[in-house]
Image (cartoon, rainbow, N blue to C red; front, side, top):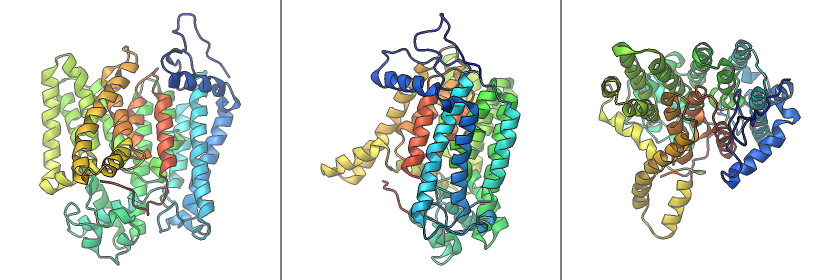
Length: 482
């Protein structure tokens, strides 16, 4: 295996193998945390874990453990249903300790495997991205036939789709109110979502309606359709990166062969795959297609993405920022107007209630967000809950832009700003948002695939795995929130 040496012209602390054909890490003295991390990485990067065969083996075992959890559904780590391949093995419903151990061990091994693959790549390993894509497609093809693992979100997607398919409005009626307490759709939903109207956009509701239209009375079939659609989009993003990214190998390792994302997005059936796909398409079109029609297409894509989750607005701001700095006012105006018009058309089918509902999710707080500790401290001091809500809602957007600016400044100035800015904003959102899960990092990973030679790979990987380990369950327990 070829090793990458440090050239005399590189800055101190460069050539650390953390993801990229040449990685520029900060020099020692940029802070104690960076120094410790750089020292640890220096030791581990030249270990056996950076051997591609070892890294692939570790990744494979991690994926297999997670898939076995889905194959032994229902258990405490899955939804209380069975998809086709989950009938092949006996349920672990009576052995929750084993199911929990398998899932968390799988998460840890997936993390180590991902780190090993990135280190190997930084030291000269150049796998065939097409083979990686095919291998990932094979894994995805199995995953979508297994019961979702680690979250009950797909059950709420199915319930909202069922409400829409029956002619109801999921933005004004909750699953239990619309479908009844004895509905099989309500039975599989996590406790926190039974009385919660949807917080997703109209495009997300359209996807869920389509799945429920096929599933009908069968909640398992509806969830299966959602899993298949999600898996197809995940591989579609990988194919797009293979064809359009400047470094297909790196992009494939960061997305398609990213075992942590496979576990969180595909095995968990998360809608964030669609958000990442729309964001990535918007960025690539903005970089490659010019003129009025290019701007119009970017606006439409951003509007559609906004119809899935409102968090994609950060990508829009990131795309607009470098254009505004170059004083390309007309381009920004065209994109903004068309994106807004697209979003308004989508939301017109459900009215203002839909807009209010989708933004309500931005007010919740959950551990491990530091805002939860801030909230608890305020309430302990006697501050009213509504006052704490107002304070947090005012402070966290400010913190987001401050952290985003710091990240933006940490990435080399020779990198394309129309990619760096969206990444900085989406990663900052993961770091400071009051309500965040591991799968929310999908949009940051998607944008990071287009940012070569940066220092943030290690941080995003650590944050993703930390979030995965913090809350990776069947979603039946209600998290603390505003």
